[in-house]
Amino acid sequence: MKKIFYAFLILLSLFSCNREYKSTEHGALMKFYSENKTNDKPQIGDLVIVDIVQKIADSVFFNTNDFEEPFELLIEEPSFKGDIMCALLSMHLGDHASVIFPVDSIFSSVGEQIPSFIEKGTITEMDIVLKEIVKKEVLEKEIINELNIRKNKEIEDLSLYYNNDNYEVTSDSLLILNIKKGNGKYADAGNIMKVYFIFHTLEGDTLFDFTSGKPYELVYGDMALGQGFYEALSLVDEGGNAEFIIPSSLAFGDDGFYDAILPFTPFKLNLNVIKIMTSDEYEAELKLIDEDNKRKKAERLQREPQEIAKYLKDNKIEAMPKPSGLYYIDKEYGEGDNVQYGDLVYVHYEIYNLNNELIESSYEYGQPLPFVYGDNQMIAGIEEAVAYMKVGGKCKIIVPSQLGFGDIEIDEKLPANSSIVIDLELVDLQR
Image (cartoon, rainbow, N blue to C red; front, side, top):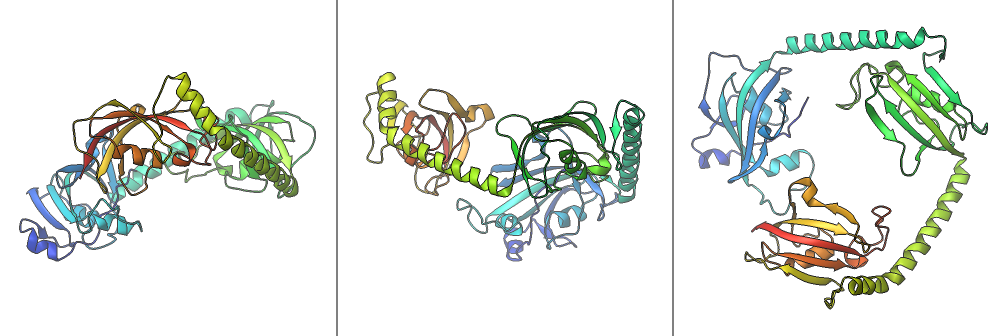
């Protein structure tokens, strides 16, 4: 089920400032555009399908029409008088209404600080159309029916394997499809294991895939991925690999795992045990890795000026650095406003390493990145660059590591203490 954030605690003072809005019996400050008083109202435990558009001033903050599927909400006990649950409990099927509340109540309700670009007490409006009500008892029957269907399907699917003499079954029903032995060293409690593994559904859909990059590290005995996974680890030695089927009773059972894994889902597990280490061996390895990383970081930091100079020469760039060390090259002058402290700015960016390999592009996401100028929400190189720009402008910046990601390793193409090149576009700002 999809969930929407809750709006809380409507201040009484709002009523005197918003005469069109009236307090409902549940404490929501609402205005009705259409009301169907003969229709049912939702109750606690019902599921509703709604259209919601949330606005701050004239800007749309949230719109359920952006979702491909109908937007569903489970009606729960209101957290405070005036929250969205209070609004929905006040509506009839087919009603169209809006509710208002201070937007900072959203952040305080989840224990977060209100962003600096939102003034405390700013009013937000939530426009709601109540399109459908699924009663609690109907919903419960649907859920029970769906669970029974999934349970029976798992029994039917697994029977094909349990009845196959080619496969071994452990005492608690873990299916062993095949095991290829390694060097004979098995894990003991507390050992560190480095493994590659992948979970598939029996239909072949991938659920978890840890088969690339560095091996997945875990402590043998950790039950986070379920009893079946733990048991499988015990059956594969260092250097060995195996294939198992884990019934849901040894995994996520009749609860599933959030929206990612449905109840009564069995897994096919492919497991490759790369290394088994004692905690002392693991700590010694970490120490060696840390020392090696420090050495490499220091070497990259020492080489950085020469690498930037080479990049400038190879790309025929004659710009001089700013006092901070940032290289700023205008590509297209903007004709809009300059950025001021506290502005909400929107930028498009393309980040490259000094080998001109693309690391990340906001254009791939289809929308610019917003951040508040001066709040240190962005790397220092971009913060400085937008100060030189006007809306509509484009530039290229060469960012030394101390103005970029510093000693943070992004990936293999961008290790710690790496300079970056950014093509930057200042799309818009809100003062």
